[in-house]
Image (cartoon, rainbow, N blue to C red):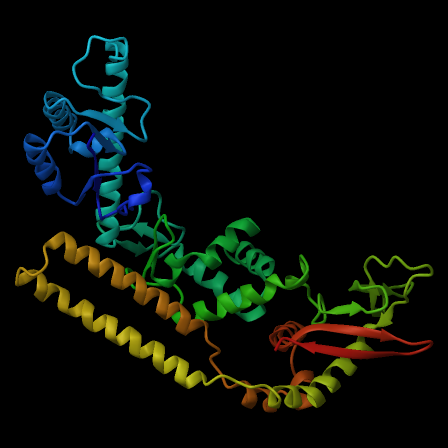
Length: 436
């Protein structure tokens, strides 16, 4: 008994199967990538070497149209080969008068299934060709852009709204605040979820992202720069560590202070006098399980102690770090990007000289562009400044007191992971846990 297997793979959107896919002891495997030369070889070999079974994933792999599939099935049937489609409920057997022969209804269902699968493959192939040519994916353009002939173009009435949204987020690191800001200034009302999608959407960086998460850089005009995009990503990562809503809280210590005694997050509470001509701020545990509960503490005293302790401890903590060679890391990534760009620039000549066909050249160029995009993303995520020099600059108390609460909140979260309140009988102390 001789068993063979055949697979057809469109390299634009599929990967070839390995031998373990078949799950049988196969005598020979025929694999086609983009064309069907191996299928022709299979049909020729079957003329000289009898074959009992042909394994295939789906019947539509035998041709690009229903007519081609039917012709190949007829050829294989004339050679008395039983076809086993692993991903289909129906199998084609050689001419037989037994009860196992498919009925006419089953054959109609099978033909309809093949037709539908062929149509689906053609759609996927068209999307894959557009992806390789860096044409935007189907669907409505993101807010701030319009669909052009083969790329996104700026919507001059909506792009300033998106730009203002990003600038506000970069200034105050508050998603909810940025959402409120564009609603107040432009009357553009969006949800917080939509705002978060704006912040993470590669389109606003001038890139295209496709279904599998692959990104192609510099396909259209961006709304924000690469430096701004890297800062947005750093702020989003930092805000994920914070309790809900603390990222947009108006006070600089919001979301940072924890009571070590009860392990409860401390929130800001406002207390006013009878006629509301004075206001006092306190930090109190949000959900203290102790009885009596841990007492609230004056906000201003904790803020003063925090600034004093940062100025005293931050330079020492940074000096004790074993910092990686950032310049070396950046240089290595730049060198790799340059090498890939050099290979990319050679592809048109290889196509002109007949070394690569158009389809292979476009596919190789697409893969290089996605690899370059990944490297650029890694480069932009590296810290842009020298941490040691920054620590020296922010170790001056006046630097902190000259900032507004929102600006102070921004810088606190750059360095501080958590502030713990160590309570004693009638006093308390602070312990600052830095991010690094």
